[in-house]
Image 1 (cartoon, rainbow, N blue to C red):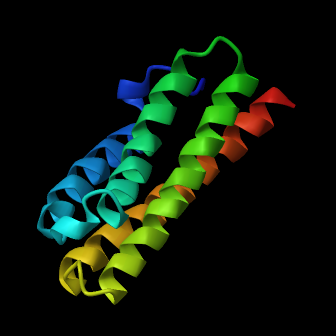
Image 2: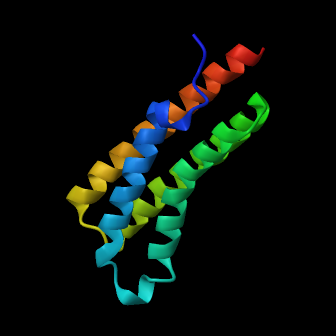
Length: 123
């Protein structure tokens, strides 16, 4: 069964899109002095995940697709770290952070599984 190149049909895209939305909502309460600091970096990394999935899906070759999925995976890992840092700094309430951290853990694992499957099919 082929892996879809239509990003809207990919489970990882749906997860990444929902999580990016939730990161935006969760960071609304960050201190004003973090508007161009941690809040902006966290939002950029969160949005980078679904946008790289979309861009990779639009590429013509499987190797380019994999490259963008690798970037998305790195951005998801970065977001996970920044969520933890935000929590330790007291900017993000622990209950909300735990849900987001769990979501990004699952997302990273799912992206890695997709990459492994794509690699197997291109060998």
